[in-house]
Figure 1: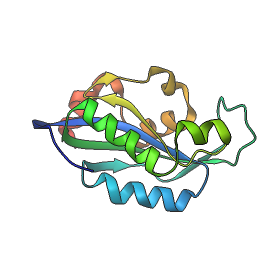
Figure 2: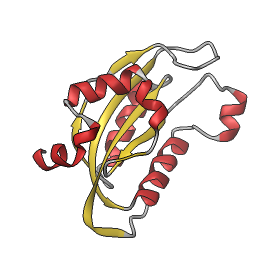
Figure 3: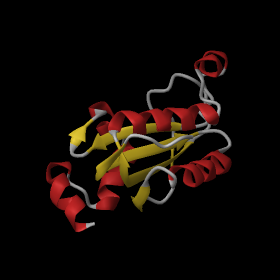
Figure 4: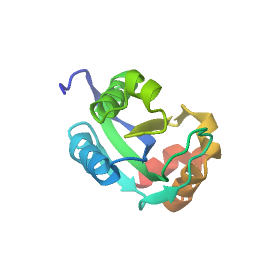
Length: 147
């Protein structure tokens, strides 16, 4: 993946990774790839959760929360997350054929104090991540300064 459009400042984000197949391989892949685009400032331990709002019979999910810093802009960073998902096999075609298989789900929850996916804040593993980080989203800027 080619890096471009770097900004002069760092952007900070909270994101989650979830997968329910080839968990070890896909999580290791994420760690190897993300380092080219961002610094992982903090991460949660691996959390195992039962599927949430998922109508298909499925294995449990492995979830990890991350606080990251990146010089990339939001659109470019989200495009990279999408490419990582696709590389692991999360494509529209695969989702239609085997929707119960989620090789990688990367959700950008917060970007520079802006809430991107408010509905995900209700998910247990997201709440557990925020608790683990001792992060109050209303105090995002002060929290980031202390990192």
